[in-house]
Length: 130
Image (cartoon, rainbow, N blue to C red; front, side, top):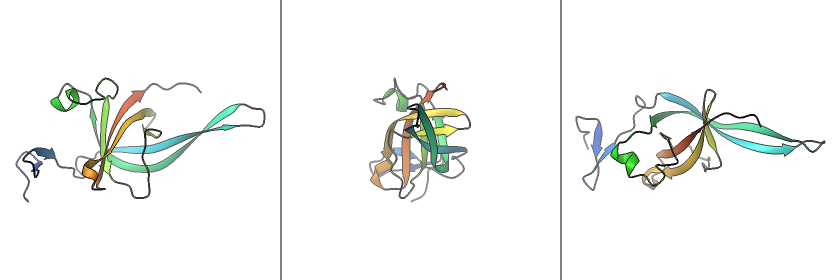
């Protein structure tokens, strides 16, 4: 199938879907997890582990139809799309980092269940101590 002039691909249902190309994935993100451990004195400490570093498409919340119809519209403020990562289970317990900015994942979708792309909705979090 050939793409349309606006960079979108026709789907089987006749709806247009945005194609994902490396040119659109311009943001490098780190997918991380945070583990809490208790030291010998009983104080908690946190260890951050980077599970993967990938390029992603990033879209901040706006008033487009896509965002208005989203069920997590009031909670999420950023959308990420990136290629599927084999042997990685991505959940809402993980988070995304871009430099020093942290985004807590509110929703993870394996787009069309084809193991090609993830679509992640996330909320930008303010950094705090502890």
